[in-house]
Image (tube, helix red, strand yellow):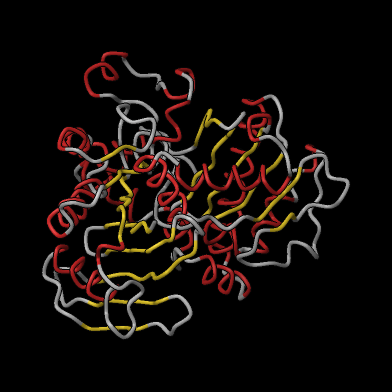
Length: 398
């Protein structure tokens, strides 16, 4: 059974075709610059990557190009579209309505549309991809896999804000959290590697990329996470501020003569480590600048690590302990020095980083010493595989 995984953005689309039985990736790639000039990247397993410049004025045309590439007589991964048994769609925000992945019906799509206010940059784009696939593959079952679903197990005390309760009742203002597919996959992999029952572990997952979040997973359930109503809350990120005093918004608006919308744009797109450093949102650029003596670049790196350490400490307290701390996503999987910087502040947990084991990028490995009370891991995330697994389970009950 083959599952086509679709992750649709406003001007781009990532895809993978996965054999859900063997979990092998048959083909993968992306469509870029949709609505502009268009570029299709296609890579069949075991073959070289192909890049094709092609007009794709809408997402429907982009998905059609993907389907054409998959059945290409020379380089296609399947003989016909009949070999696609289901489509799994990443949907960023499901609000409180969805605690699990679900088959896409008109009723489900209507609820996703109702959540557009909570994720205006993501949900509308996800829906465009869903509609395009429905038009091109009307008889293929489709499943929505929500970033927020994994966090629906959080208790009220963790997701409720200190605001008038009526805002929750009227507008569903609460903590939702994101990167749920990644946090779920990585925490399960940690249990597998440890050879322990997932339901008995206390794990802290550090999803550290340009967008970054931390999740406390107790007994296989998310009990707290750093992102909130939107992906702006929590850690200092690439261009996002993370936690700030809310009064700063009005203060900056008055000082800089900005509207609230303009201040929010600053917090989302001009802040984070890029805003602190004035250099870049890429930690490789920051490391190079810091090496040359750029204080602000060094400050950005240190402030990022400090915020991660604070959240880890908070979640150890929230769960009354921790068995494993896992690093994942771009920086988590590849940032050797960043992992070392964070781990150096965790000695109170009885854990010690093994310098030799930590010298790794993009591979699953324990990076703590043999005698560490709390285990440290690097585990590459695989959100596409998790979407394929959920899609298979929902459609075929397996």
